Image (cartoon, rainbow over all chains, first blue to last red; front, top):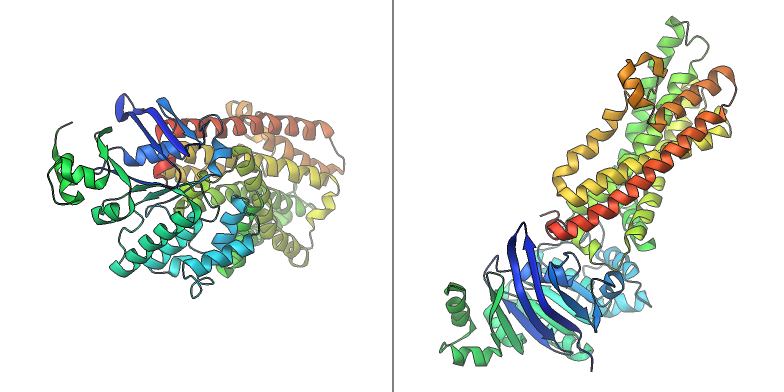
Length: 242
Length: 258
């Protein structure tokens, strides 16, 4: 079985300063792994390189055994991404946005696909509303809809439930769990919500100052560090000097 | 490509102010210049009986202005709506982005210009269509140079981020005096003439005036303009690719619009 995502000895330097230092990890099919760490630890840079937005200084990224640097555009068909820092065109309706991105990803049977997403993400009431006029919870669901429009093999989620109320946050987490099981999608989750990480991730790796400083199953890390939960593990690791 | 065109088509279709904005400025510009040219036709021997020259040149200049601004606007819209990253993680080749922007810029340009061209006839008794077949060549020349300027500015936006935005607005105003839109190149000081001769605009506007005054087409001017356009377009496309490469190294794409 092919590994959807392999990160091999990846590094990124900006003006001689290392943002990511020689990290390696695999994301297997039907697996959710968490990428944790304090702000500025290199999570976004790592995700940027996986998405082809950044050129690695050294190392490589393989999507389904194919190297990202050599086949960037083709491999982007197999990826998708959401982040609270990225939005969809505000003046278009939700349906228009989904149609645009469906075309950009060359989705077959787009109408059927959009109808499926509308139902799964409870978008019926907002589908013809202007995206910029939606609440943050509604916008989050629309971004999630865009991120699965192409049935990505690898889905990258950067803080998918940031600034959401508990009910909407729970809905998003449940959706992701079900979607991942149904589609056998591989998910890389960057989150500061440790309860979310414990619930969704089969394994996590912790980054600090550009390096992976620990990794394993959430329960293993909790036991290993003698803490009660991932929140305490995070605090311990984030505060220790690399 | 169709998807990207659709993204901007929906934006324009769903917004009357945007549509009016596209129409408003060319119309105002044409009306303003219409009165100026009327003034010259009364008081200047040079422009006597050739009222249409200044107005025609104003419309031609607007082709350049609209196409360049349209190209830049398409890019800036993505930055302002914080959609830039979504666009660059979609499976789009750089050449597909360029082609769809060129095509969408053409549609935006025509939406803005056609009402202005139609208005000049009843208001001032002048039709730019009197230029005949050469109008198509002049239009193409100006449109190509407009999108080339758009490519230069967009390359700057990719490489340097939103801080490059002001250059997008000022680039055309910087070129206007050197383009010799309303006067022959001899009016410029000698040093500026050397620079101006490197711009296709000089040949395009010189030829427009030549056709209107002498009723004769000098293909030499049109050919020179096309060759210069081709040269700058190739540079623009290369620069766009190079900026994308540099942005991937520098990390500009990842934080665009934030």
